[in-house]
View 1 (cartoon, helix red, strand yellow):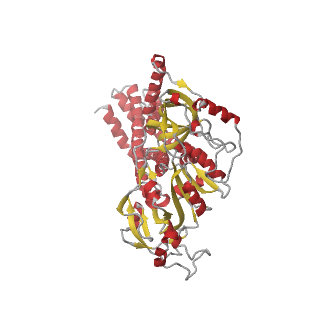
View 2 (view 1 turned 90 degrees about the vertical axis):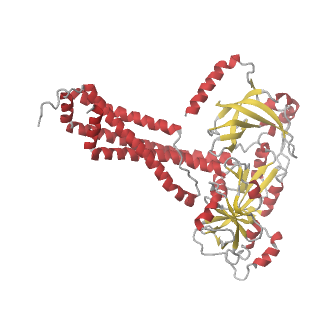
View 3 (view 1 turned 120 degrees about the horizontal axis):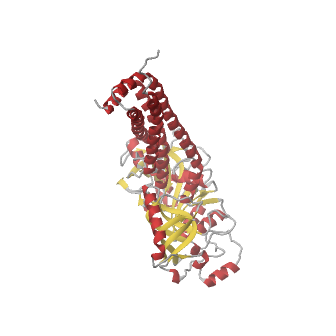
Amino acid sequence: MHKITVAVIAAAAILLAAPLLAEDPRELEWLELMPEEEAKTWLAESSEVDHSGFEAPEPFQSYTTVGELDGEIVRIPGFVVPVETDGNGKLKEFFLVPYFGACIHVPPPPANQIIYGRLEEPIPMVNIWDAFWMEGTLNIEDISNNTADAAYTMDVDRLVLY
Amino acid sequence: MNLLGLALRSLINRRFAVILTILTIALSIALLVLVEQMRSEVRDGFYRSVSGTDLIVGARTAPIQLLLYSVFGIGDATNNVSWQTYQELAGTSDVAWAIPMALGDMHRGYRVMGTSDALFEHFRYGDRRALELAEGRAFDDLFDVVVGHQVARQLDYDIGDRIVLSHGTGSTALQQHEEHPFTISGILAPTGTPVDQTLYISLPAHRAIHIGWERGTRMPGAEIDPDQARERADELHPESVTAVLLGLQTRAAVFGLQRRINDYRAEALTAIMPGITLQELWRITGLAEQILRVVAGMVVLAGLLGMLTVLLTTLNERRREMAILRANGARPWQIAGLLVFEAGLIAACGIIAGVGLALLAQALAAPWLLTTFGLHVAVSWPATGLWLVLGGILGAGLAIGLVPALMAYRRTLADGMQVRM
């Protein structure tokens, strides 16, 4: 409870001090995370899903990233998909996705429409049915394997209810 | 003698009623604390049990069901994943590692899991901790078994002991795999997760002990000889596995793969992300938790009202006492303060005794929960939020003390000086 009070005070202080800070978080839209040409193809394309195997090509998969966004301080809304907790059930690492989970009628968002968030300090588990504003430094991480070469990650400063 | 001393002596004089009141409050507080403590401990226990696993795959079933039987050993699977599908899954390019889990056998009430070396290499729990062997080594011989910490402790097992597994998931073994005794090759370090209650054997061994069981029960004479099995170990594999834990090359690929597994046409499968499924589980149990909380709150309220009753009824009996205090120079506000102090003291004693009682109950219930449900419940200090609630209850106790205090304040002067019979 005490930590929450501190967090609230800190949040209030940040809000009050925000105009003084040099770097204001830039509000980002999900489509901005996808390179422009790709976004065009993506929106134009609609193909049938092949269900025959685990390796079957997805209707659209995109692992490319927008280079200019690397290192920017941004703010983006989304839903939390918990991935890692510390030993005490506190949230440590998660995915931020543009819409909530089990929509089985359309394919999942492509990889560049997902941000992997890491919290410096684990926070009490959040509700996955609530939308959150995620604020922090966006990074593009090199991943060298056969499916992808880069992905978005974020060092999350704050996670607040939308 | 000061007023405080008088108050204490007065309480001691009425000790029977006072102790009963304290006990009532203590029991209600214990219930409240226990409900809250168990809730958070159970949640922590569940979160601790699985870490680093991106997807859990099983036959088509409800996500919560799959999570419970694969990781927590609660309930049974209705169907398995075929061996071909398991191999295809493990070989998918997105998949970095796959831990197979073949269930269905027990040893003296503990689950036996057929798995591979991937378990020791890739399984994580708590804060991404890997399994460690406290003694011995993982599978070497075909009929080697690695046992969890609790299994070894409860059954008093050591490296080199020979044990017999039993068929089926009941806790009493009627049908034994006595043709194939296993040798304990390793004992795992304690984890505080269901791993502690599990015995691990290799997949070929899991297959070997089930040869001759194809008709659903043992066909005498159809079993494979242990030495023959050892020779054929390389070609032995089960027909199916119960569940598979997957770790991915790229975590961001998890949504796509989950979808492809759930859409897989060749076999009906379910793939779940453990973090999401746990939250779904909490959403269901949340209602029951809420009801328990309300009930506990009501009981605390009843306890406080019980205290008010006792204070009010004794107030009449204590007219004389009050009158004498007044005659000796005590002011009305001091009499009132005395009653509030009494109420506060009773409430405080009740709260302290209640928390003690709750922690004791938790400590006593912990071993039973561990052996029965595989839930590791640590006796922990109540969280800050709970202390605030307890503080609020103390405040409520003081506030309730104001009722008799006001009555006494108004009455003391006239009342009791003249004795009315």
